Structure formats: structure tokens, C-alpha cells
Length: 247
Length: 149
Image 1 (tube, rainbow over the protein chains, first blue to last red):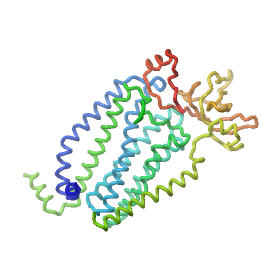
Image 2 (image 1 turned 90 degrees about the vertical axis):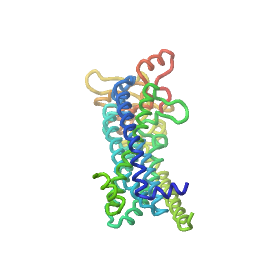
Image 3 (image 1 turned 120 degrees about the vertical axis):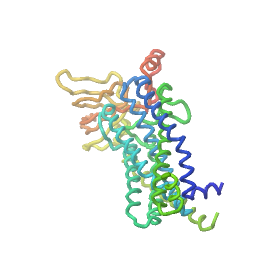
């Protein structure tokens, strides 16, 4: 187990393995996104109260779910970077932040667009929405903090601490609708018991959530590969790779 | 595991635990302020401040909506099944505002305990289903919005 873990710290190995993973993961992700989108937007019945406007759920819920999960990926990479001083973990943490920020932004914007016709307002300072806005600021904070340092090791340490402290926010976002009176409704998909969303609407939603997880993985690996090449551009293995490509 | 790394692992665990406790206490201390609205029971118990803008949220009582014939004024009652708060509002209501559905009204309580609302928002519940299923549920006597908060 430890050999695999230590191999992850090797840039050429990680570059090679991520390349072979992406070869299958990327087409599968695009297929799942396409099928889920068409299924959800065109082939599901309208909702009995909201009509067609509920269809934004097929973007909103997956984006929000992966924005939360992505934060744990970033914080875990941060913890590994703090404990083992592994450069590849620094890169993973740094590459998570913009993807997570984009997903959080998408969740906030789609929620706002849905909120206007449903609730009657674009924005309300309820617990779920405010804690989600804090998540966006945490992601942006990690990006800004990383850029604020010239020394990459010091930047990684500061970002790791920030992202670990920020993990407190994730259960708060998740449970906010149950702990406090909020305008945002509680979760429709339940891990225990029957979901309060009809199966004909649920299955495309689950497919979209899976597709967004895969999209996160693809985006993360692609960013990491670019960052690895950038940092290792003066090393022998990158030169060899480029020469092999040029031939 | 190398002792230095083990030490750093404990440091990371301490960091997460300590910040969780700190923020947990802050959130616990502010819990009253994090609620978006007062339920009618708390308004009836006098917990909501008078002469200050507040939000009251609950279910719109069946048959309580009275629209004025001359202007946009509408009266309805909000309930949490423990107490009800009457609301007066003048303006356009959201499409999803309806009897038996959740709503949040913001405004001030007047001397008679009526909420004079300046804004009314519809609160959607977590139930999603096609219209046919909702009709079938209605026919069988079960309410489609049954377990909403």
C-alpha cells in the first residue's frame, strides 16, 4: 500500500498513469454528461408545481454536491502535503481550488436563477445560501493565498492550513437546511429511506451527479498534468517526452 | 510511520478538531440569528421583536387567502400547526404561493399581532413528482406535499 502511495509522489509516474486514466475517463464523462443532460432536460416529466423550471436541478444539484466533495479532496491533499511534504499533493490541492470555485459559482448562479421564479427573489441570506457563499470565498482564498507567496513550499503550507480549517464549513452547508429555518428546502435525495423525488426524475439526476464527479476528476487530472509539466520543464523525462512527441 | 510525520499528522488532526470546536461554538452561540424566519409559535409566544422588521415562515392556512377587489392587497394566515399569524400584504405574490404551501413573509407586527408584510416569498418543499403522480396521490387521499417542514 505504501509503495503505491510513494509512487504517487513521482511526477513521471503520475503523469503517465493519469494519461492512461484520462484516455478512458474523458470520453466516458462526456458521454454521461451528454446522456444525462438530454435525458434530464428533454425526457423527464415536468414537476407538478414548478413545471419546467425545476429542470435546473440537473445542473444545480450535481455542481453543488461536487463543490462540497471537491473541498474534501482539496483538504485531504492539503493534509498529505503538510504531513509528507509531497509536491504532487501540493499540486493536487492547488488544482482543486479553481475547479471547486467554478462549481460553487455555478451552483450559486443556477440557484439564483431558480429562486427568482420559485421563491420570488434572486437572493436571500438564509443559512444554506450564505454558507455556500463562504465556500466560494474559501476556494477563492486558497487561490489568492497560493498566488501571494513566491516560495511554493511556504504557499502550499499556508493553503493546506486554510483548506483544513475550512472543512468545518462542509457539514454546516450540508446540514444547514435541517439545523435552522431556511428558505432552501431540505435534501430530496435521501441516503436512508425513500427519496422525495420521483424515480423518473431521480435517475437522470443520479447520472448527472456521477458525471459531475467524473468531470471533476478529469478537470483535476488535466490541470495537474499541465502543472507537472510546467514545474518539471527542465528535467530529463519531460524533454524526452517532448522529443518523442515531436518525432 | 516516521515520528516527525506522525507528529505532523497529530498537528493536522488538532487543527481540524480545534477549528471545528471553535466554529461550532460560534455557530451555537449565534443559532437564533442564523434562522431565516420565526415560526408562528414563537411569534405567538412573544419571542419575535415588535416594531422591527422580522420574517415569519410557515404553511399558508387552507381557505385563508382573501384578495381585495380593489387593489393588490391580500390577507392570509401562516401556521406551524401550533399557532397562526395573520398577514396583510400589498403586492405581487410569487407563482408558487398557494394555500397549503410554505411561505415566508417579512414585515413588522402591528398592535393587533398582524404582520404587515413588505415581501412574501414562496418556500418550496423537497417533493418533486410528475403531475400525473400528484393527481394519483390526490385521488388516493394522500397529500402530495405531505412531509414538508
